[in-house]
Length: 107
Image (cartoon, rainbow, N blue to C red; front, side, top):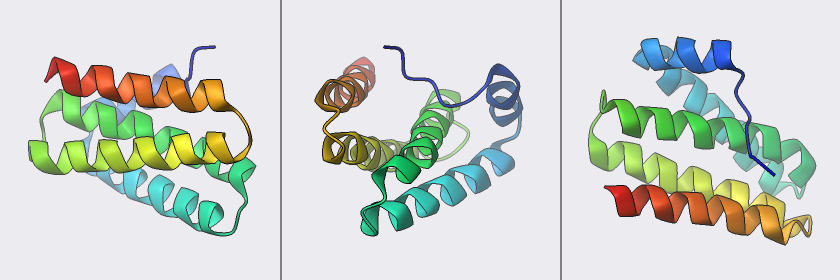
């Protein structure tokens, strides 16, 4: 299973507009955190997934401070993996954490 939460058009738009990417990351992360706190993991997953992908875009583009970008990426990875794990989707949770480890290893 390939994890993908952003369509190509949104990925391109967020790649080109750091301000919008930051805003969308924050909205996605906060919404996912709210649903996660309520135990509504199915609802949390799409928002956490978008935050995860946006954080990776921000880390790749290096348009913001690297420490901040990686903190957001780490937090988004944990949130997404936690939601998957709580639903019993262990393979997807491991995949998210594996992608995060690969990302940090490259840096």
